[in-house]
Length: 219
Image 1 (tube, rainbow, N blue to C red):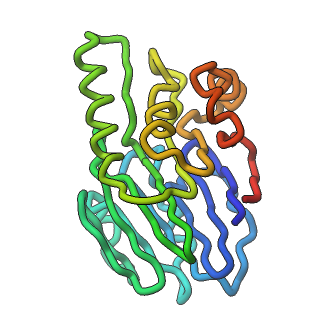
Image 2: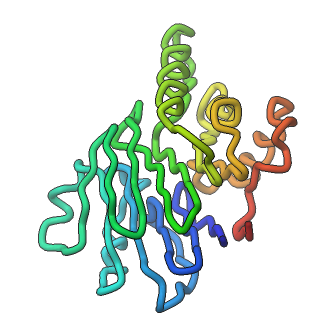
Image 3: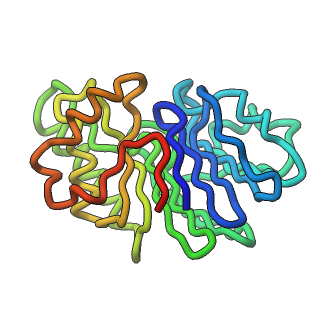
């Protein structure tokens, strides 16, 4: 498995026969194997998660899994599955389960080629500078959604947003709840250096070897 961070929350996960493209709206994709089955997944319609460039990948070996909020954008395009929270979709050679976001859209749990991948989208512990009960409620929501994920998770993609009062809270919660083999922080825009500083938080020491911030990672 090869994981490429494109930009912000945009990632490509390349397996033996599939290339999974998550929340791509900006940046250059790696050269994809022309024989790969391409699956483009978009968690919601925010401009930092969806771009019309996603349709540049349309072709006979490409399918789309989109949050239902993008139904209008999908009109006129084929091989599209519109999804909503707390549902499961059997797409033949892969299975997509959805969680509810506490911002907009869905999070994805994708099972493909024996691998299980959590892509959180904008599901996170949104710990803003606001009354603590609201932040605690956000964390409780996040953990409840993760508790719906039954079984092992190979890879997780979770926001680490430098704007937050506690940017690392969602990463810590995901490690505690699911313990994925590999976790990729995301949603930090152009602030890669700041993301690396935040990922050095001592709370992540128990999972130091599982947290990845490289541009390209082989697993």
